[in-house]
Image (cartoon, protein in one colour):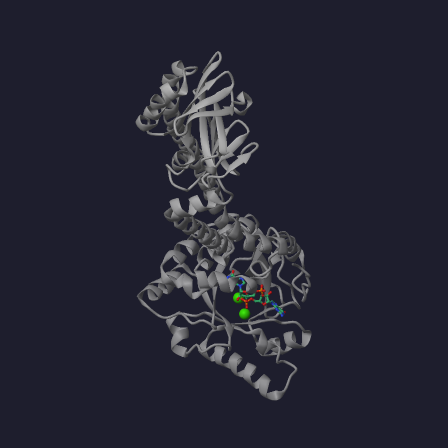
Length: 526
Ligand code: C2E
Ligand code: CA
Ligand code: CA
C-alpha cells in the first residue's frame, strides 16, 4: 500500500528526528552558554585575585615603610627607641606592632619595650614575610609579619590578620579566595593552614605578587557554571527552549507533510508514475474488440504496481485526480496513437473521470487534444462517470457537456445500478451508455429475484435508447445470457484482463489478424 506501509526503521527515524532536531538548538545553545559562563567566571576570578592581591600589597606597603624607617634604629638601646616604635604603630594604618632585631634577637617591642626572643630567619619567606598562626599576645589569631634586615640589624612589623581577612572579603563571598605565603595559607575563615592551598575546581586563577613573596588563589566551587547560567541568562534559557520546541514542531510538520498522501501523489505525478492499463470491451455478436477501457495503475518505485482503488480515493479527495487523468490521457495517446491503423473506425476508448473534472472547462481541451492525436473518426472517446458520486448540475457542467457533445465525446454512466441517477440526470448530461455494474452481472446464475433486477436495467436502457455495456463478465454463462438479452458490449476477465501497454499493443496486432469467426480472445494480461 503506497500510503500505509512504512518500514520500521523509517518510522522509528521519523519519530526520533523531531526530538533530535528540537534538542539540537538546545544542546548547542547550552554548550555556548556553558562556554560563555566559564569564560566570564575565569575573567572574574582573575580580576578578583588581582584586586585582592593589590589590597594586600597596599597593606604590606604600610608595614614595609614602617620597618624601613625603623631599620636604622636597630642596635640602639631599646629604652631610647621605644617611642619611635610606638610612633610607627600609631601612624601606620595596618601596623599592629613594631620590633627591632639585632644579631638574631628580637630585643625591642612596641608594646613591651625591652624584650628577648630569637629570630628564626627560616620562618620568613625570602627572609621577609611570615604568615603566623598567632603570637603570645593573641594566640590563634593570624598575623602577617614583615621583616627588613641589613647585616646584623633588622626591623620587624606585624599586620593583624583581620586586615587580611577584610581584604579577602573585599569583593564579597561569591568566590573562593586564599592568601598563600610560603608554606602557609589563610582563607576567609581566618584559620592559618600549612602546605599548599587547594586549587579551585572552576575558573582557578592565581595572582603572584612581584613586590612581596605571596600569592592569591581565586576560583569557584563545582556547579558554579550552572548557577551562573541560570542566574545570568534566564531569558536565553527560555529562548532556547522555545527555539527547540519550534524546531521540533517544524520538523514534525515537515515530516508529516512529506509523508502525506498529497505530497506522495504530487511526487508521483512529477515522476510520471501513473500509467495506463488497458482492458478490451467486446461487441455483441462476434465478440471482437470494439474498444478499450483505460484503467490507471501506479508504477510505485517501492511498492511496485499499485491498484487504483488504493490511491484514487485520496486523489479524488485532494483534487489531484485531475492532473493525474490529464497525464494518463497523454500517455494513452503516446501508446495508442502510433497504432491507430490497427483500430477499426469508431474504436471506443473509455476514460474514467470524476465530478472534479466537471468544475471547469479544462476537460474540453484535454479531450480535444486527445482526439486530435488520432485520424479523424478513428476513435470514439467515451468518458465514464461513476454513478456512485453524482455531478451537481451548474452552468459550467452544462457548458462542459454541451462542448463534449459537440466534440463527439460519448458519456457513459459507470457502475450503473449502484447509485441514484434519475432520468433527468441521464438527460441533463446527455448520457450515451450505461455500464451495468459487475455486481449485477455476477447475479446471472443466481436466484430469480436478482436476475429480475438485471433484466429491468437492460430493459430500461433499451427503452431510454441508451447503449449498454456489461462489465465483470467472467463466465460463458454470463456472456451468453447477456448476448441473449442483446447487451451491446461486454467487458470482463472472460475476454481479457486489464493489461500493460505492450501486451495490449501485441494483442491488438493479433486481433487485426484474427478472423471474424473467432469468438473469444482470451488474453491473460496485467
Ligand atoms: P471501474 O471503472 O468499474 O473499472 C472496472 C474494474 O473492474 C477494474 O478494476 C477492472 O480491472 C475490474 N474488472 C474488469 N473485469 C473484471 C472481471 O471480470 N471481474 C472482476 N472481478 N473485475 C473486473 P480496476 O482496474 O482495479 O479499477 C478499479 C476502479 O478504479 C475502477 O472501477 C474505477 O472506478 C477506478 N479507476 C481506475 N482507473 C481510473 C482512472 O483513470 N480514473 C478514475 N477516476 N478512476 C479510475
Ligand atoms: Ca470504468
Ligand atoms: Ca464499473
